[in-house]
Image 1 (cartoon, one colour):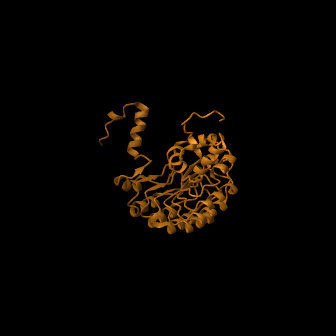
Image 2 (cartoon, helix red, strand yellow; image 1 turned 60 degrees about the vertical axis):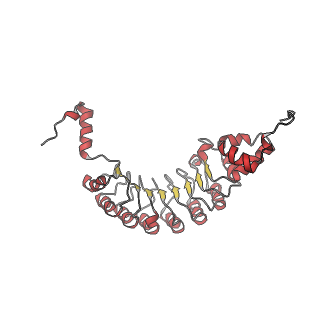
Length: 293
């Protein structure tokens, strides 16, 4: 800073970097502040870069709602030990050329969130499958570029996948989900197929028969899913804890009742409850209605 240092005073950068500053100071500084800190001096820039090189988790939301492309490249240019990567705030500009090098340098990735990154392509998913075989959690929500071929390559190379969000991946059809179920089998714990009109009972039944450890399934807006698929879930998925079937108009209450008795959380209320709520909204006296026949 150019200010004369008092005798005996210790500057921040004089503290041990590996033993003090990195584990106890920079770990508590938000990424947004690190971008400012690295501009203070060459010493702080080197310290911040050393910290970033050792990152295990990177969430672009910590930088801000609109992370600049240049900042993304700088923050991750030396990172080689990432285990978690969340890039939703980069959805407007993130391209294969931005993401693929990061994936290639970080084979230990366990969790990747690419929700809404619509400018990526199958190349990015291929790089993820090829370079990150230990992947356990992946969000591809609203990525219309995900098709059956890309999904096959992913599940072939990432057998440890436990959580997969395919919300609004509208190119996917029953055949792709059947293949996914057969390849992942008992490792799959959570799956979202919401807002996909091409997914029907065939896919749901195959998921039920091959994925007995499935705990969470989101079928919201899957218009081709009906009661047959839900009955198969009740028969073959004893671990199921939550099921989302709102706007699945062909799913009838009798197929859901068995799951309700097991305590499965279902986002559609039973018909009697719906009727009481409607009466209460209309007249305000539902609690006093005599329901005896």
